Image 1 (tube, one colour):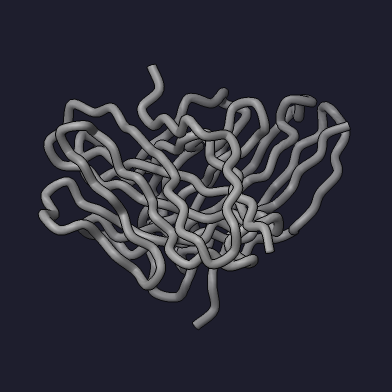
Image 2 (cartoon, each protein chain N blue to C red):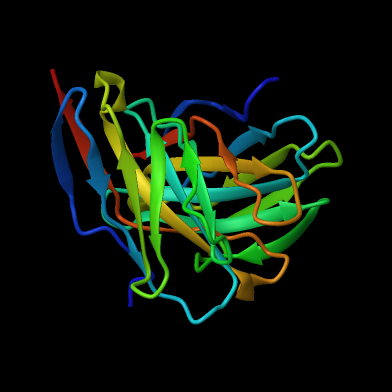
Length: 117
Length: 113
């Protein structure tokens, strides 16, 4: 079973509009972390935002915010005021505490975001 | 501060050959992880190294191996290359402790012909 599900293979948004990229996860751990990464065509994975399972507030980083709904096991990324440079693949990832000190990220399949002028 | 550096960026190898990829982490980062990215399987965890020790390994055959040096630089080796090993190999480094995010390099794109 997939641990991270991103149901939108592709999304389109007009420049300056907001867009939400969906992510649901599956874990039996109480302590875990959720990450969003951006991958432009150059290949590098760029860290965007992090949400801990015990964090009560939704994480925000500039134009990025994470809509964390723990009971629904969802961690959607919201990008406000989209820019042309936001066009890229976006990956949701999770690290489970059961890994102990080990650090392993499990990634979703990704969503290709295209920002139209 | 320099980011994670992976060399080479592109590589073409023949089936049956072996290949070594290199990763220099961000200064001060002691944990280095490797991931394989393919269109079919997506991003998959290969292994993680910390203080020259492999701490965690993904579900890959023994042809995939790695090591870490005392300066935290890491190398990944794939022996007896197969066509299916064609992929983008990404290296990530992080400070240890807590849920610190991992910072990725630009990857090495390996093509096996």
